[in-house]
Every structure is written in structure tokens, then in C-alpha cells.
Image 1 (spheres, rainbow, N blue to C red):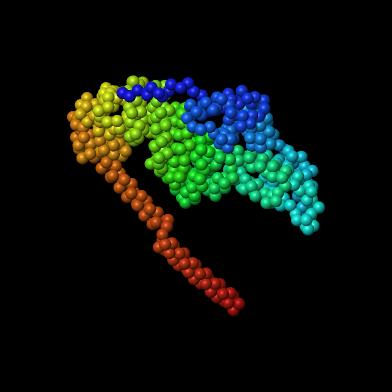
Image 2: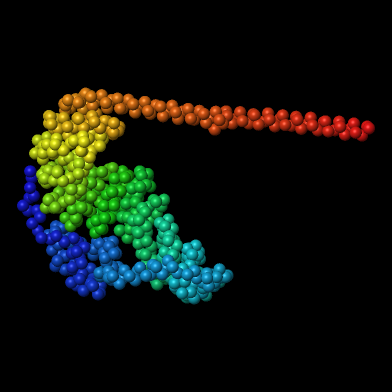
Length: 583
């Protein structure tokens, strides 16, 4: 079996990037105050990490800013002074208290009534400027929306309301500051958050007051984080792709990445392609600084939508490759499996490069990887010919654990390793293990799983008599639990009766054919029964144009009979009255 290259894994830089920057920022006084990104880039530990661990040029300030902005649970980044500090426990407590106060704030009746009584723009501006900020934030969202509409642009100097111009920006800023609080109090979902985001984005016009613009930026930043949290919790839901395109043009990169990852649920439409194309214009180095879970979300979305994967997967692969040596083995294995399942884009050079970087990053970690990680890596590399040496090393480690891995998981691992071929020693050992492990009475594998095992091993151990004697016997005994998927696996393992030989083979194949025939009969019976039910429904008047005509005709004839009876009774009454008068 292969062994790790001597030049891999010998370096002692085992820190994650977050640990690296934590140490660097702390050493520069970032526990108490802000540290400029320029100073951080000069830190010797940071410079050495990029040179030795990542083997790439040091990030510029713009990319480094993305790193801290996208990790707000650990960092506080000030874009104005391009500086960062560690987020404290006190900051978290203050944030929690603020959100709690917003959600439980009492309804501000006086402010609400003052706004209702406002007869013109001047009255509205005075009501807003006279209210406490907490009362404005407790107003209903439809009231805040109406204020955004009425205060969107200042009056012209020639307007009769020009007298409010000096205090107008203050009212605008106060309404903008109230937006996040009103949305928190309502418990707004993604659609409402995005509707307000769009309103705030266009609020104020082109010639806005500088102070109002500053508040607008703060409000947009808070709304972006709320949008990101909503997407992270429940995905995009019914939110349209138009809003995602808007985010791509205006929101911070980590929020854009979350929104685009939600597109996987939207399918293959042209609007998904358009969003993916817009996202693909972002330079890959900018994505390098995103958290691993953000890149994993994007890769997972590519397993659900080919329209998304075609444009996004190569970009994600390129960005991940740059920092992959700093990822954990668990995150690397998840990324590899997502790439293997992606619906498009897997033939790009960026994906091929990532496979090489992943093999290099994982080589020193194979012996300490969990069984689940080994399975993911084996399945992901099973079709990557260029990394065969690495897969051989994974196989040599895997066969040491066969007796401790549950059989369903071992089946998946076997499925990933058989691509090494019949001559590989580890594959032979796996076949030997299965020849003793498969037992009809004790094996936890069901009929379909046993059928899959037969399909997987048929090409690499066709002459292993002990193995096929066991598998054949078990399959025959569990034939009643084999579904269409299991029958398809058996037919693949023994096409037209070929493949490995064993004593019960003909009986097994006959049972599979019989089971398939019975299932076909059941399907036909279900179809006939469904047709009979529909026919009975129509005969009872349950549907069809003809049956409706029949009902209408019957009603018409019935009404005709009733009319004739009524006219006859009328004639009888008139004759009776006439006779009475003659008497």
C-alpha cells in the first residue's frame, strides 16, 4: 500500500485561519481596541502562515475584510477605519438585550395617533422628530413603510412644505433607524425583510444628506445580517430570484453567498442561470475568505441544480483550493462528496486542481480520520484517476478497520474502493472479509443492500467461491425483501445469467424474474382498479360532460312536469270558483 510522502505533513502549522488571526489580533491589542488591517498584514505569524501553510500570497486588505465581515460571531469589523477587534461576551449580551427589548416593546399609542392626525408633511416630520427612537421602532411595519414612502425625498425649495427642509434629514434618519426594530418586533420573514431592504436601498434619492446616508448604510447592514440569518434558517422559500440578483449587486459577499446557495432549491430555470452568472463574476480570491460552511453550502447547492453548478462550482472549487490546507478533515471530506454529486461543472480545471490539493491536505490526516470521513473520501475519489495513489492509501487504512465498521457503512466504503481493481491488495482483503461477514441470520444488510454488495464485488472478485456461496445463499433467503432497486443490482451483477457462479444462482435469478413479474401484475391490477373507480364515479354523476347533460335534461323534464301540474291545478281552481258564482 501507498504511504504518505515524506515532504507532506512535516510542517508544524496546525492552526486554523481563525486561530491564526485570533493570536495575531490579540497580540496587537485587539481585545480592547481596534487593530488596523495594515498592521495585521505586517504581523510575522500571519505572513509566515500564508507562505508556509497556504503557500500563497498574503491577502490584501479587501479580501481580509471579507474574512472578518463574514464571521460576526467572533469579530467586530469597522469598515470606516478598516480595523477589527475581537467580539466580546459583553457585546453578545448587549445584542441579545436589544433584540429582546425590540420584540417586547409596548405599542406606542401617542406616536401612532400623532402620525394618524398629521395633516401634511410638516406635521409628519414634527411627529417623527418628537418621538423617542424606541417608540418609532415599536411602530407596526406598515406604518414604517408609509413613513419611508412619505419621507423618501425632501421637498423642493419651491414647495409649500419647504420650511421642513432643515429638519427633514433628521426625520429620515430616525425612520431608517427604526426599520430593524419594527421588523424584529413583527418577527419578519425573508419576503418582508427583502421588501424593506429594497425600499431602504432606494430611500433618499440621489442627492441625499450625508448623515442620513450614514444611517442608511447602518440600516442596510443590519438588514443584510437579518436576511442572512433567515436564509440560513429556512432557505429562500418563495423569495424570487430577482431579489437574489439585487443582493448580488448590493449586499456583503457572505450574504450573497448564502442567498446563491439557496438557489439550489429553485431548480433549472433561466432566472437561476442569470443569478448564477451574476455570482460567477465575483473574483475567486474574494471567495477564499468566506467561512468553510459558506463554501460547503454553495457546493451542496450545486448537487441540486445543474443551472447553478455550471457557473458556480468551478468558482467554489478555485476558492476552496486556495485555503484547503487550513480546513479540517471533516469539512474537506464533505466538500469532496458534494463535488462528486454535483450536477454540472465537475470537468473543470478548478475541480481537478481541488482534488489534487485535497489529496495533499488529507494525506497526513488519513490515519486519524473517522470512518464516516473515510467513506466520503473514498466515494469522492473513486472516479478521480489522477489521485489513485491517495485512494490506495485510504484503502490500506480502511481494511484495518473492517471488523469495527457497521456493515451498511462498510458497503459504502467498499463501493468507493473497488475502483482500484481486482489486483489491489486492499480490495482483495475486503472481499475476504465479506466472505466471512455475510450471514443470512446475523447480517444487518437487507435484501437490497446485499444485492448492491453483489453488484459492487462482481467485477473485482468474480472467482471468490466462498464469497459468492455466502452472498448467493443470503440473497435467496432474503428474496422477499428485495425491491425493484435490488433486482436492478442483481441484474447488473449477473447480466443475462453471466457473472460469478454459485450453487443457488439459477434459483436466485428465477426468483428475481418471478418477483418482477408479480410486481408488474400488481401494477396492472392497480391501474385496472383505478380505472374502475373512475368509471363508477362518472356513472354516479361524478364528472364528464355527458353526465352533466343528462342531469340537466332530467331537471328540465322535471321542471316541465311541475309546470304542467301547476297549470292544471290553476284551471281546476278557476272552474270551481265559476260554479260557486253560478249557484
